[in-house]
Length: 84
Image 1 (cartoon, rainbow, N blue to C red):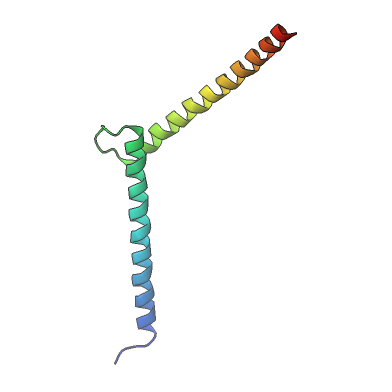
Image 2 (spheres, one colour; image 1 turned 180 degrees about the vertical axis):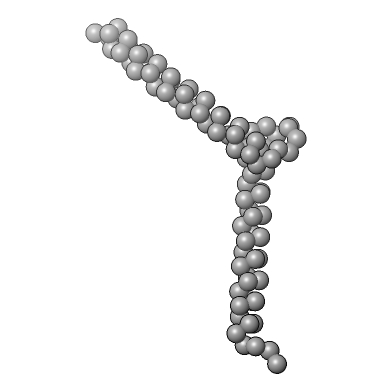
């Protein structure tokens, strides 16, 4: 005799495991895409290396944006002085 209470629980566990596998597969795919965007010619890297490199690139880009904003302000002021 099959216990009615056990069947839904096992079905839910299977569904949860399937959803978790789909989630992990998506995450893995996105990590590989990110790694390829960083350097398509490098060998596969582990997730930690991809995140560390991405973090450094973002930090460098943010620094560059700040520097360019400051340069823009300076050039705008100089341009106004020349126009006056």
